[in-house]
Structures are given as C-alpha cells and as structure tokens.
Image (cartoon, rainbow, N blue to C red; front, side, top):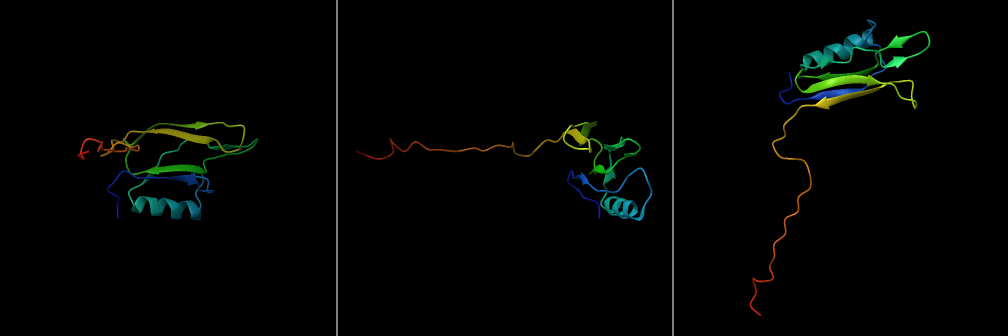
Length: 108
C-alpha cells in the first residue's frame, strides 16, 4: 500500500544496511511495500576496524529530500544524518493570532 503524501521514516535501525541479514530483509520489505526507499549510502558508524550504515532515512519521493550528508560528531560514535526538505505546505507554518478592535463598536 504505497503512501500518497510525501513521507519520511528515519532513525537508528541497528541493522547494518551494508550487510544482508534477516532483519535488514524485513525492514527492506516493509518499507518497499509502502513505497519507501532507503537514501543513506555512506557509513553512519565508523569504528577502528568496522564501518556500518545503521542510521537510515527512507522516503517515498526522491525529490522530497536533497543534500543528504553524514556528519561526524564528538558526542557519539554514530554520525549525524542531515538533509534538506523540499516541500511546499498548503498553509504556512507558524502561530497566528487574530485580534479585533472592539473599542469603537459600543456606544458610550
């Protein structure tokens, strides 16, 4: 059942996307059935002797996400995954307050 709205599923899936495994196969099947494709191609966890892609970003639109990159941080052995969204909203984000001036509407 493919999703019709632009959709992103992301997180630390703790399954290495570089290796075939039953868990990877299950995740891949679930995402594929919903029209989602995995976009992270570079390692997101690098140790002295190993590299793995465990932080994943899935989307149902190639045009929805751009400039995806892995960023090394000093606070974790996992890299941060950064990307930009190209999405036009039907209504702008933000908080709007409408206020009426009723001071002239009453006879004094």
